[in-house]
Image (cartoon, rainbow, N blue to C red; front, side, top):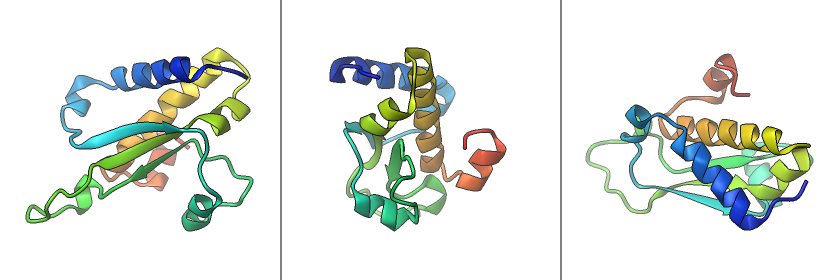
Length: 124
């Protein structure tokens, strides 16, 4: 599947726009970026197999783990990985759905929601 960088960015932006305002108003100091692909080291650090797809990654300190006295140094980051999504999806509709699921999944990590809880909610 092929999608231009510009169109892929639009799909990611729409996915962010679809998250309800009552949730997004609590999201602060988070940069959302798009990269072509993750490094092999990222998979290793996460305990994933080299051939396991990774569509997104949240890096930062979840809200549930922050202390009031901790200074904000760098923004938290959500990275959406373009190439694994394009390799996995077979249609535009599937791509849009997977990007939306990935964005929600990574925002959930910002709020401190675990992988296990996300799986219970159907975001695995």
